[in-house]
Image (cartoon, rainbow, N blue to C red; front, side, top):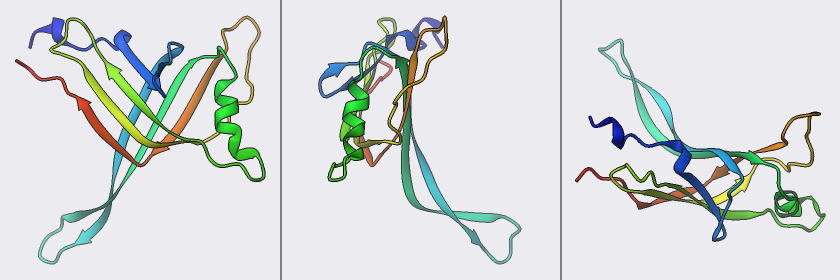
Amino acid sequence: MDATRVINGSYGEVWSDGVWLTNVTSAEALVEINKEEINVSGTRWTGHKATGLTGTGNIKGYKVTSEFIKRIGSIAKDRGKPFVTELIYKLDDPEAFGAERIRLKGVQFDRIPLSTFEVKTIVEEELPFTFSNYELLDEIKKP
């Protein structure tokens, strides 16, 4: 393995509605494979059957505007609709074998980030969410 090809997270980006969220300092997205246990006779081992998928994620970054309070908070109105969007996660380290982009579909945030602060500390927001599908737009391949 060529150590210079290892991805540096400093080149990670999150995009929302075509806008690069430059304030994001960390991001995560993963798909949990939901399984049922299957007991099979003649063995001590428990088998597993995949029965569904659950997409979850989180973005964390500096508080710069009230945009996410407004967007996610639309559900707080009596006749408001939930804010559903897509996010694009991008890794593009110039030393890597290429760039990776993943589109997260059906993103719905789990909470409205009203306010948090601590004296003499930079204010950050944490936005956990769920998503219903993903698409690998660009993948990193070894030449």
